[in-house]
Each structure stands twice: as structure tokens, then as C-alpha cells.
Amino acid sequence: MQPRSLREWSPLLDEGTRDRVLRAVQEIAGSIRSDHPPSSVDATLGGGAAGLALLFSNLSQALHLEPYAAEARRYQDAALAKLSADSLPVGLVDGFAGVCAMNAFLDMDGAEDSHREIELALANNLPTVATNIGLEMARGLVGCGVYALERWPKPGARRCLRTTIDILSQTASFTENGVSWLQSPPAVCGDWRRDHPHGYVHFGHTHGMAGIIAFLARCLTVGVDERTRPLLRGAVDWVLAHRSQNGSRFAFPTLLSGDAPSTPGWVYGDLAMASSLLMAAQAAGEFEWRRQSIDIACRIPWGRGATEGIANHALCHGAAGMAHMYNRMAQCLDPGTERNDLAERARWWLTRCFEMRRAGHGIAGFLAATDPAHQANPANPSAAPGNPGLLVGAAGTALVLLAFVSDVPPDWDRLFLLSN
Image 1: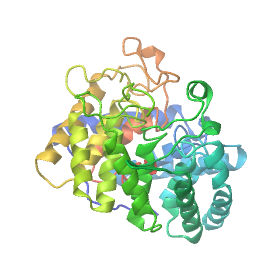
Image 2: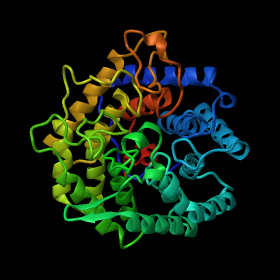
Image 3: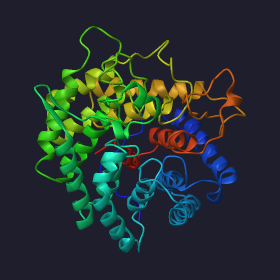
């Protein structure tokens, strides 16, 4: 069964440009099929077979080609087989919650018993996840909640989500500015623990406030719990109270305790926060949140010099991620000036993707984000590996490009809390 589609979607490109973009998508898909078969990748959503199953499933819907549907099933089967064989962490991006979220999204027949077992295990272990790993989306509590949202309204998913809301309610810091959440010391790793021994409040999407806001917006949309709305309101109020008012190029820092500007992208940055605020505005029917979201998105620098700090195509930290978030936000608005402004920025970042393309390098010329700097050097593209992954590699880029040329909504992005 194909994943459900919740809204209409309109391609932002004219037909001539669409042909060029579609060719690039098919080149990426062809390269992944030939060079990165299911046996060669891990199980995960962020970098492995689960993410590639989403790519080929979306391709099969958009292009109505059975070979892509068959390829999706191959990667899906491989992800589930590796999930059983490998010892994975709990997380959404690199663990079993992400693989299970993919499986629930694609609605695989015959998986109900395994889902019930997973939901029971998750619900019992969520307090430990929150304490030892943290509240964040990428590897912690909120990421487990994303899986449960894909299973809603199954009884096990209800239990998981209400337990998650319990934990968020119990761990929230309530102040006159609103509600925030601390990444507690046991969940802070490496150099971050040295620099922040008492923990920190993170503004980002995968590790902090933006992701929690987006998660609460989705919970409010489906009707998880009556506590969701006040938590969401408190979180949005807190974030907006900390928006820069001094004419800075950046609306938010990365951490509450620091003044370093956020790196643009999905992981953290102003556009990710703007995306989450728009989701919250839609869920709660709050016009002022909507206005603030669009204002933040339209104040982000673009044009000459705007790609500083972005030297790859990746969904997580690259030009494709910026293009997709602008595209998604534009599609949420009625026709008019605001939608046109966001759509123009989406197309601008899409153009940057093709300007950064390097023939003979990466996958079909598209460069991956590489650890630890999450950047590939465009002056030395051979340093960028051919990474097929959804978050840091070519699969995510292909999904973003496809959303510019297809009328099939890119509902895969709700697994990354980019849509309600």
C-alpha cells in the first residue's frame, strides 16, 4: 500500500527546467541502484536502506514506474532484515525507530504484530531514553515519538505518545517567557559535556527546540493529548521571546548560552525554526506565529554570499535542505506575495544545487556532507565521498529535486518533522 498523501502539491518549476531536474533525479537513482545495492548499506533511515526505500517509493509514485516500486521493496526488505540481525541504537536517524517509522510510513502488510511489540518496548523504555540519550529528535525521545505518530491511532502508538507528552511535561522549564527544555548533563556528549557541564538549551531542529515544537504541532494536529496545546504555546512563546532584536543577520543562536549564529540547514538554523513555527501556526490556528515564521524565513540572507558555510547538497546541512524547506513552506500558503517570496527563494537554492554540482564526483555530481565538518570542499570535490544516504547524501538530494517537478506531495518529510 502506498503512503497516504495529505495535501495538494504544485511543482514550482516550468516545464523546460523540470526536464533538467528530472534527468538529475534519474541519474542519482540509477547510480544508487548500480553502485549501492541493498546489501552494501546499513539499515538506517538517515544513511541506509530505510531512507533509500523512501526514495524509490516516492519515485514510483511520481513517475509511475514499476521498477522503482520493486526497488523500494528491495531496500525496505533489506532494512527490516538488517534490523533483526544488527544491534542498533534506539534513534530515529541512526536506529530502529527510524527503520520502523519508514515501515509504518510505507504501511507494509503483515507487520502489525512486530509493531505492537516495538510500541510496547518503546513505551516502557522512553523514560530511560529521555534520561540517557535526551529529548532530541535525531536520537532521543522525540524521534521515538515520530515513529509513534506514523502508527497513530493504534493503541500502542497512543501509549507511546502520551508517555512522551508526560515526559515533556515533567522535564519542561516553565518561566515567564514560556517553556523550554534542557539537554541534561547525562545526555550531553564529548566536547559539549566539557563546555556545558550543566547541560544546554538548543534551538535547533534535530537537537532542540525547533524539533520539539514541530513534534508538538504534529501531536496537536492528530489530537494526542489535551496537554499538547499549552506545551506548544509555551514553547513558541519562549522561542519568540529569544528572537534577536538587534538587527543581527540571524534570528536565533545555536545554544541559549552562546551567541554563535546558527549554521543554515535542517539540523539547525533560522529556516528550520521558521518551518517549525509555521507547522505550529497551522496546527494551532495562530496567525501571529504564521506571520513571525514567514518574516524569519524572508529575512534569511540569500543572493551573493548567502551560501557561506554551505558547500554540499545534503538535506541535513546543504543547499538541498534549504531549497526543500522553502518549497515546503511556500506550498503551505495560499497564492499571493508571501507564497511567491518563499517560492523564489526555493528556486534560488535549487539553482545553487546545480551550480555546486561537480561532474565525476559524489553521486551523479552531487556532493555529500561529510563528518565531522559536514561540508565538502567544492574546490576539491574528490574529497567528498559518494554517499547514497537520505540525510547526508544523494538520496535526500534526489527527493528534494523530485518535489520541485512532481505533483506528488513529499510526505516523506514528515518523518523529519518538516510537515504536519
